[in-house]
Image (tube, rainbow, N blue to C red; front, side, top):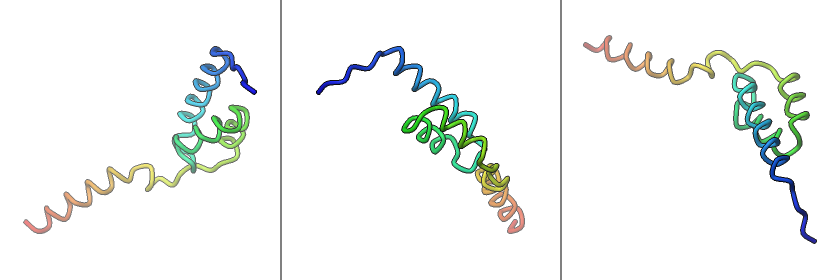
Length: 79
């Protein structure tokens, strides 16, 4: 059996999932996890997951910055 999906509904679902992923960027699951939850289940479930999840620890949010400053600090100490 072939199911037809209205393209407007599909695009709205994808856009809502993307927005929820952006809202959940600093949460425990991050962008990709929140995007997948809202895409697979529904955007309403994605909002609930964002609402109940905790913030990501600050160190993980700034991991790239922390690594680059650590390597600069080590090279400055050696010189």
